[in-house]
Amino acid sequence: MSETKRRLTGIKPTGVPHIGNYFASIKPFLHPEPGVESLYFIANYHSLTTQREGGPLLHSTYDVAATLLALGIDLDHTVLFRQTDVPEVAELSWILSCFTGMGLLERAHAYKDAVTKGRDLHAGLFTYPVLMAADILLYDIDEVPVGSDQKQHVEIARDIAGSFNHAYGQEIFKLPNPKIDETVMIIPGLDGKKMSKSYGNVIGIFEEEKSLKKKIMAIPTDSTPLEEPKRVEGSTIFSLFELFGTDDAILDFKKRMNQGGMGWGHAKVELFECMRDYFSPYRQHYETLMASRSEIDRVLLEGAERARAMARPKLQAVRQVVGFSS
Image (cartoon, rainbow, N blue to C red; front, side):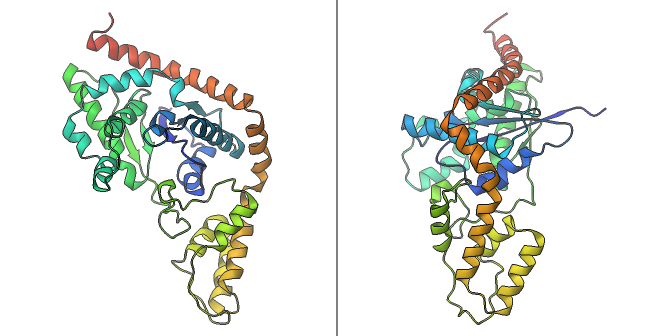
């Protein structure tokens, strides 16, 4: 019998969960692979690097949890928890920071990007990769699903784990591997760039219907006349339609646009209807969860206990080897 693998992913509760999050880091967890145990955490510690208002942060935390639950995340095979409900991660982060070279952190893409753009720099932003390493190493994670632009975070976790293991001459930490799904495309935002909260170009998973239609109708397109054929490849409208439409609907959409007689306005309306219908079966459950948050609290606290049961032995081994306990 093959050994069970553990995988982990997290999502920051900054703003609403959007369709980029859905395809990249939510949908893969709705139908777990055989032999894989998943941990999914809401990264509210990480959110403090950019979100300083308590009310919006708390609301977003519940919003993320309600979205995951409404979409049907498999709680039998997935441990869903809030990062701050596992205090062991904060202690481990400090310990790991003492085994992390400054040069390693200075080479982190997010930090270098912040310096280049002249953003407000603080210690939390600089040591962000250490906390992320603690998130991963605390649970003996085998693989971390990431996009190619996030691969460095897993590599840094491996470097930190290797430094710690070398310092004590034993394998305290398992070295995790990044898992990059090449089939997951970069989800375009409203402006055609990668969908990202930092770009302000996102479409929420449970976007209100009026807002959803307004956003889609405002997506820039070319000025090809209604009667002329239109090339849809590379357009934001078609790229989004491919994500939500059935195979037959996608082929028909492309055929009608290529033939002419169908304008971009018509295409936008069809995209709106397709996206609205895709998530509509889950909306009522989402709204019910958000209206009374007791069910969310119950699930998150149960998940935190399961996560802590994994975390405590690892932290105890670390405390013992560094000399904090006998």
